Length: 359
Ligand SMILES: Cc1ncc(COP(=O)(O)O)c(C=O)c1O
Image (cartoon, rainbow, N blue to C red; front, side, top):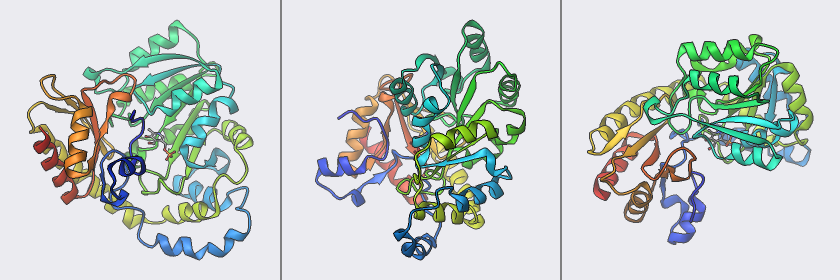
């Protein structure tokens, strides 16, 4: 089977004849604490509202986002997971030619292609920790004109961030009236919020930031995403999104999650500590090259003498029911790369033991 997404526990458990609950999933990078405690009460508290349509203007959620980010509600559009935005952006903003920085989440290329957008691909390299060098971007933009540029920040799948000078360059470049639109995927930036491009929105009318509740709030099943952008872009996107795409439960849960400050602090502390510990332990395995990262996942390169990532994935799954993300399907990576989420201490210990065993 071709694996193009992490977190595919339903398909794999059906194939293996086990329950999805038997799988320890390191392939999708989701907050290992799960959603904030108390969410069940919030969800059950709005059950009776299910007999009405959701608020078509998503006011509760938009107002909560506006307060949380200190951004005008007119700069926000909410969606059924960020994937819905990814599919609507090329159409809503009329993108016929785009530059995508790879490797990146595969749905961007698919969405552009479905829309008939002509694509150029710019690859970040192993030497640069798979984060784009801004000189390369500048060169590509000088050679050819584009209507949109797609970046992931932090980079997914490597977890690296642009340095300060590169951020400054993007801000300056994208503030000119002739700039292409910059689609900046920040679905993991909650783990390093200081690095968000949201702080520059007043100066960057051409930047559209794509965000999500999936990763940080542990809610992939509820489907909540949102856009932060200039009021012109946000209004255009709101006009295109289908009505009621964020359901009543998702709106209430999303708004409530943004008030969970203690949970946010706990998450940041846990992920920072465990990421550091995993980096140290994985780096001590012969043949593993671990990339420095700022989110809740780590990209690892296997030295040529070792088995490819697809075999490693099979081995740890068959023996330990642990799922890792073999990155062979990412354009710009190959069968030498895999990615793991940062999880709870005992789970991370199980991962290390399983990897050592499989080698
Ligand atoms: C980089 C990146 N962007 C966007 C998404 C889509 O997330 P969601 O639709 O759950 O918000 C993912 C999911 O894996 C991702 O890894």
